[in-house]
Image 1 (tube, rainbow, N blue to C red):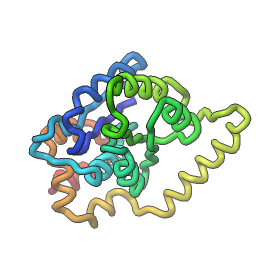
Image 2: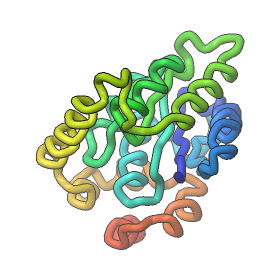
Image 3: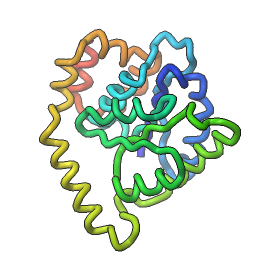
Image 4: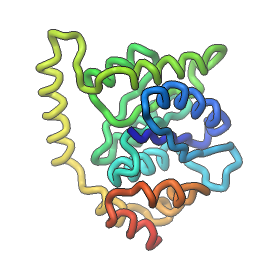
Length: 210
């Protein structure tokens, strides 16, 4: 699984620490971590949590990433920004129980973490343990055992409803404010990381045209 890390500007200073925690949990399981930044608070490309949501949607809907780890001060804004798009099911994760049950029950493809709220001593340990619990379980496996069948049925219903209630991603990219879109994909490593991994040529071609 290719896991994309996205940091918005208020928590950009923690990027390298978050990347290290994520890699420590993901790489032993055979997953690849790709860091889309922000890499530092003074990066030229300033990603707000709203832009982080759009970037997450581009990566997931294009196949450039299989899973996205993002967040903000509380995690709430990033979660909301991700979930407005098709093909993105983002959970708000605060502890290891959240991480485990989100994977098992909700079977989503993105998480939003609080990188400021309650983030003190041991914050990096909590992050690593959350990533380990999230990635080390069976996505969609259900919990507790007696709830597996209805949970899996509800996930299919949720996916089908989301497909009906959203426009497709390429249409969104064409209709969204184009300056906002250009700013979102202007990160210093975006082109190098994205275009070689994108599996939807139409999305790649449109973004290149900008």
